[in-house]
Length: 313
Ligand code: COA
Ligand code: ZN
Image (cartoon, rainbow, N blue to C red; front, side, top):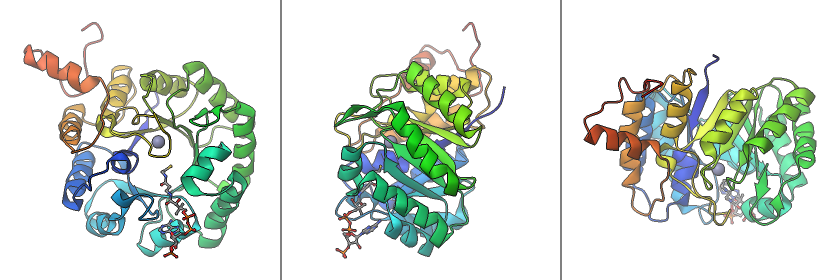
């Protein structure tokens, strides 16, 4: 079966939800741990307003410390042109550009209309010409905390606007509230693939209703090979009331590896990092696999090699 790429977004989507400032050294330790566990891509923070998200204010320090000394590819979220300029000035061109499918969420999140955000996203690509890996993330692609279910036709119209200038950028559909059902994810990616082809689609699940692994699998079956996830399921969007963190990275690794889909990640090492993430003061965590494997190991049952658990075990 074709392998997948998992992007750990806990240092961005996870940390941004934590109020007490996480010391920069602690962030670095976690990001390094993720890379050591085999994560090849990590979204380490964002270039955003310090007043909007003080937790992200040390992004320059993180980049300065990590860029040249880590095996993983590091990306940063940029909500607008200014953020992209700052990121590139700081030497990082792997940009995650984000706008929402719903007007209310976009206004709350980045204080713009959706159209204005798309114009700005296009300007980032065309004027700044970043040379790294680009992701264009469409938040609230399935559901909006303020407006309810997002019509698929609306998302398709937005994708249609992005494709002409996106080049080989990844396009991510984000389930910001965690309310997408497998049937929604199947429909969305089926339509995307048939209208716009098998390009670099990505899926970004939140686990608010416990559906993150289910929808991850559906996305895989419908052609997606790039998945965002957060170690220990840390998170909860400060701009999406009620939503919890992303699907846990360890749950995602467990799902894929045991289904015969390689992730390149060592689950045991990842579990150590995820456990340390649970100790972050003020953090809300999720995920099931950590507790399940811990319980088995208390009984002396070892989940052999990280990832391979016997199919009938
Ligand atoms: N990074 C850092 N500073 C930024 C910035 C960015 N990306 N964009 C704008 N600013 C600064 C401006 O320079 C200005 O500073 P000044 O007052 O010293 O001149 C100030 O912020 C206000 O600028 P403005 O363009 O009016 O921005 P805003 O107040 O409308 O805020 C955002 C827009 C996008 C910067 C802000 O809403 C934000 O950071 N949101 C966070 C989005 C996010 O990360 N959400 C979670 C991920 S989906
Ligand atoms: Zn998210």
